Image (cartoon, rainbow, N blue to C red; front, side, top):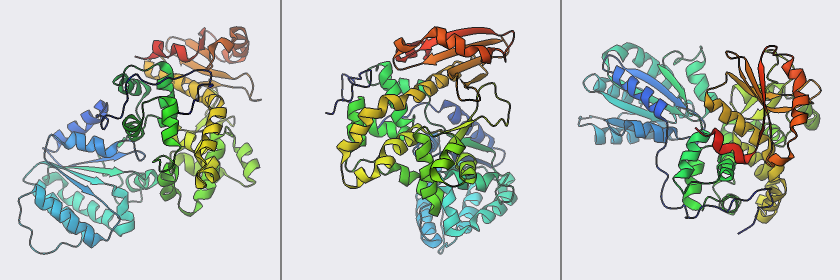
Length: 462
């Protein structure tokens, strides 16, 4: 096994091998409670819920976990003709419901009308997975659903759950005022990756890992349930073993970025990929990105932020709304890793030189993780519920950076922290000196200063 332990710390892995079975269902209590309440409301009238979030975040598994205890119908919208799709749907309807269906149904409009009619006499959940695929099959289906829903909703007891993975399309279908299904969803649930706390609970089920292990899983998976499932099934959980699995011939992770995003971006995916690669390398300012690409990128950055939900703006914590001092960052940790180490070295992937990529990871991982450790502690502080504002600080000249600033405006307290993988390198005198300008923006606030490293993680896990 390759040894990557010159990162300044070493993860020896778990005492026991993982790789036992598919990871059990974790967390999602809030989402399950909401889905259960909406199902209860269908006693009075039909309800429509949208379950969205990026691929691999566990939308389908959540829906089936919720529906498993009561009558439900799961229909997957595959990329095929409407007629063939309806044949598949009819077979599943006949399996679940004991109803005679005479003749051939060729349109989803008739399928949906049939299910609405069935729900007038029986309460059940209908799950439509990959709901955005109707766009390529027959975009008129959305208008047909809207018409049937509007005239039948109050007489039906249908619990409709629409699952969508292409964020831009789902956002358009349900939140664009010009679209037929705008305003029809009773709830839109955006499923997020597992929190640090949940990741720690999962890893605790595999022999209580060290803080460094938790951080590595945060960096490599971003809390995506599917990635955690793959790694718990195929590796021993150590950093070395995970990298050996992820960066190898036939690895499911090699083409993952392309598989996730090319459908979203379409023909211009090359430009979007270049921007995301630059951000993953720490080129976080628009002018910096445009200088390297030698073209205007404002429209692309806006779409990556608002249409695709892949990047976000980060401003100093004391900045005014709309201020011009800002940076961009990828909000998906796995994709950040993929663009930084795999996509950037795609020529090595094409010739099968995976050892070359592993050497790059070995050389750069510790530097790469510096900002992610800052993000890690910012997320941890957010989970505490003790602060209403959490972020970082830098001045107009991009100097006097403070890694973490946590503020409680009610109690008028402000905590400032320097964060490093090697905590011994932190100089508290310098931190206090850098904080003087920031503190001038918060007169009357009680300040506190912290030095944080990997060894402090357990103290902040709740």
